[in-house]
Image 1: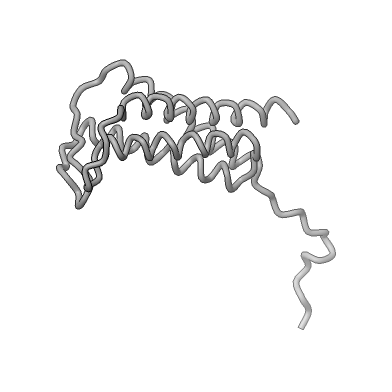
Image 2: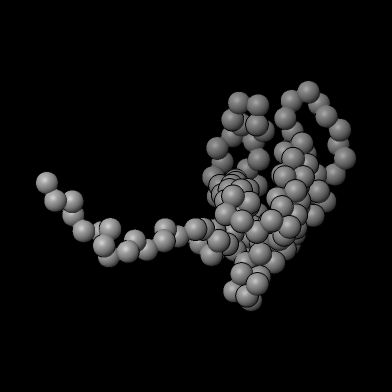
Length: 143
């Protein structure tokens, strides 16, 4: 396994791992209220990020990298959206507008960006490319 394939694997694992740890820390233990709370969303994000981080580490294939990309990119999109836009509550989702930056938010944003980029590179490096067709087969069919 070349270094070129190890770097995105480790970077995606580390980025998603940091994302999971920060979300678990921020979620706290506020219990469940019957509706989807910010705490519940953070627990879910932390759990999904942790599982996908391990998946990418043990099985660096295109599908786990695509899943890692979707998890990291959606988390990055959410943190940026709720930082800059007050969209209010959406259905059962709470209003999570928070127009400030603080250490943990910056850390998880950077980690999600690193994981998103690393997963995209991982997909590119592990995706199968079509084998080249021999010249004899590429000729047009005579009618």
